[in-house]
Image (cartoon, one colour):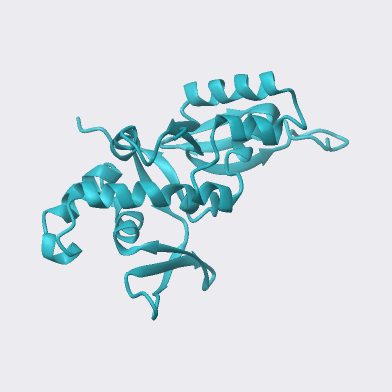
Length: 207
């Protein structure tokens, strides 16, 4: 399976310069990554925003480098898209990993997820499915184990630290191991992020 690409950080949007008359084009865009606010050029923003992709495609872990190049190259050349992907990866604004494979652990240990939605309810038909959304609207159903990491990892150093903490109380998580929790949240991440129900933040390192 190819490696999924996901955006990192909280988008803060466009910044227009103070000019008279007002300009129609932003001077740059901003994304908060941890304690920093990074400036993106319009071209970088175009690719960064494109990495949110299509929620249905993200749900199947199909938004990879090839997907981005194919879907964004109608606006700019494929070589420019690929170059911008590399730039954004090097700046820590994108992460590329096989979230259903071994490289998922790098994402789990390297990031935490900050929830930007709310919990709505579990499902009457499937009580272990938890619905999350915004403004009272259920937008995404995720497994209970994913829900726990989505809800609490922002209070801990990383998603993996959160998985390990819940794994210390097996009865509370139906005897799930940290690896079980990690596999569930890694599988759910593309859907959560593409629907803007959470964003990735670099893990806090221990001094």
